[in-house]
Image 1 (cartoon, helix red, strand yellow):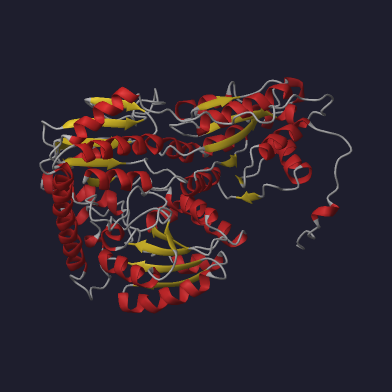
Image 2 (image 1 turned 90 degrees about the vertical axis):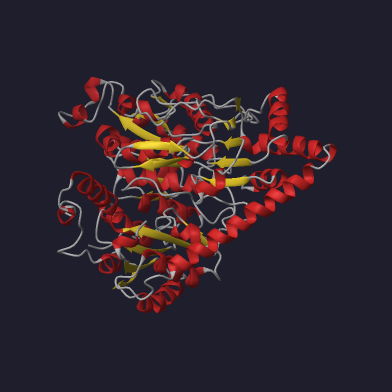
Length: 595
C-alpha cells in the first residue's frame, strides 16, 4: 500500500468553520506543551482532527502501541525536564489500558496531563453497541484514586477553566497526574460563539510553600548543635532546579547523605555521599534531616525479606526533622503513604526554596559559634574517608569472577561505564541492582532520570527521558531489564519512527529474577527444593532474541553476548550508531550476581 503523500504545512486545508474541539487545542497551545503521546481512538476523533489541522500538529503527536506506554513516555519526559507532557487515551477501553502507567506516575510525583474522551453523552447520538460500551457513568472513577484531579466539562465554555485548574493542580507540589475527559459530542459540535479564555498574565501555578521562619530557626539550632547529621533526599532535586541546594546544605553541615534516588539529588562520587552504605550513613547520628521523602522507612531500615521484618539503622535517640510534602495528596485507596513518619520537627515546604534558607541560617550560626567550623570539618573528613573506602571496596568486588560467562552484573556495569564515560551521558532509570551507582560517576544533575520503578515501566519512561534529551547531543543509555521489555516490546518502534536516539544495553538474566529470588528465599525458609524456584520465572527455551527484535523495529541490534570481552567492541559500535538512530546491545548476565 502506498504511503500517504506528505504535505507542506502551508498547504494544510483548514475548515471554514470553528469546532468546539478547537478550544481544547487552543488551551494545549496556551500552556506550551511540547509533545503529545497517544494511541488513537474514535472517541476523540474531533480533537484529533483539530490537533492535526487547526493546530497543525504542533505540538507533534507520537503514535504509541499502547496507552500505558503513552502515559509512561510523558512520565519519563517529566522526570527529565520537570515539565508536563500530554498523553491521550481512547474513551473507556483505552483508559482501562492506562492505569498502571498512571499509578506509577502518581507514586513518582510526575506531572502528566492525561486527556480522554467518552460518549457521546447524548443518548440519541450514540451508535448502537459500540458507543454504549465505550461510555461510562463518570469515566474518571476508574482512576480517581490515583490522579490528583479529574473532570469532565459539560459545555465548551467549561473547557478553558477546567484545563487551567487541572494544569495548576498537576504542577503544584506534590505533583502528579490529572485527567480531563471530553464528551465526543462536545468535541464534534460546531462552535457558534466566542468562548472566554483565561486572561493573559494570569499565574499558571502558585508559588511553592515556604517554611515558617520560627520552625526554620528551631531546625537550624538543632542541626548546629548535633554531633553527627544525616540527610535523606528523595524528591529534593526535582528538575529543572538541580541539586545545588542539597549539596550546599550537606557541605555546610558536614552531613552524610543518603540519596534515595527518585530523582538524582546528590553527586555519586561526592565525599559526603553514603547512599549505598546505610550503616556508615547513620552510624552515631543524633539528627536526621529528610528532604521531600516518600517513605522514611526503606532507606533507614535493614530488611529480612524471609520474615518480613525491619530493623532501624538510626539510633533511637536521634531527632528527626522533615521538610517536604509527606502527607499532602495521599491516596485514600493505595497505601503508598507507607508507615506513619513521626518526625520531631515538621515543615510542609518545598526543599528547593527552603534548603537555601536553612543553609543561610546555619552559616550564620557557624560563624558565631566557636569551634563549630572545626567540628564540621572533622566529620567531613571522617565521612569522606568512609566514602572512599566503600568505593574502593565496590570496585574490588566488581573485579571478582572477571571472566565469568555469562558475565557478572558488576562487570557489565564497568564495561558500559568504560564505553560511555567520555560522553555526555544520561542514564534513564535502572542501575543494574545499584552497581552503576557504585561504579559510575554521577556528576551532573541531569545524568540520571531517577531510580527504576516496577516491572513493565522502564522502557516507557526511558523513551520519555530519551525524548526529553533529543537534540542535546547527549548519549541516553537504558540499562534495560529483559522481563520489563517483554511487557512492551512493540514500544521499540516508537524510537525508530520518531528518531529518538538512545542506547539500550540489555540487562538480560533470562528471568523475572526478582521474583525468582523470592522463591529461593522461601525454599530456604521452608526446606523445599531451590532447584524448582525457576518454574514460572525463567525466560528461556526459547530465548528471546532482543537484538533481532530491535532490528525488526528499525534499530541497530547486536548480541546476545555472554562474554564481556566480546561485549566491549559491540558497545563501541552501538554508540557510533546512536548518532544515526537507536541501538540495542544484548548482554546476558549471571543472575547470581544481580544483588
